[in-house]
Image (cartoon, rainbow, N blue to C red; front, side):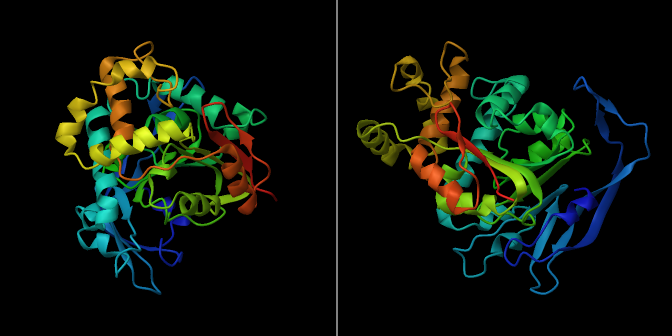
Length: 354
């Protein structure tokens, strides 16, 4: 963790500023990004990096650990004590309530097994940048607009977007509820414009109105409260900034009935059983009406990559589907302008009214 992250970090319960208590600190040479996207070691002086410590909210007394360089600001309001996950500093997610643990463990297993693949959802790092521009950005927002801006990747998962955005000189704040944020941190902590935090997207530990661009790609519909997650993220956007989301679309009553029936079994399966079973329906991804939302199929990805997409759909406990009208209403209720609706298959972005 870079000490300057304190300027935007807040207690996820009370939203008060946090004080830093350092237990272990080192110094690193940061990588810098050239215009070409190449990363080179900086010739400047070494910069501090906090490896272990505590973040404390002075008024409330809530304390959050920094473990292996990552601030762990998990909150679970379903517990009598919402910050109980911090009771085990080395594994704060293990104290989450049962409502969360299934989803957290599903995605932990997914990125533990698939995150180092060259392509995720059929896209490598550069393709992820193109997908971000085409699917999560209104056409009137240029590449130049992003330079020097602060972006929150809410649910960073595999880290491909963190890589692509930071290579372009963008200040990236990467947030995820799973312990796999540690892997993302280890890959990118030398980049001075990357900050990684483990946190609950329903209670993001970020100061309101500090982010130029907040996006959440395929995440909020896997939370216990999709609308609540949208509201929480909208509050982080500064006036004139943007909020972009990608959510599962509502396809048809028939698709919803069949998928819900299957998921009533698959979400209760042991992950070691479900993962190999996900290879079986891969050919179905090429059938119209049953293709993956990410457009991943054997035409553009390997069998293993396709199986990961199946696992992504059938594993997590929480899953909601939405319509463009519903999403548009959310934006207006949160003080955003009429949203741009993207092409794949239900993405949207809008500017926060000044």
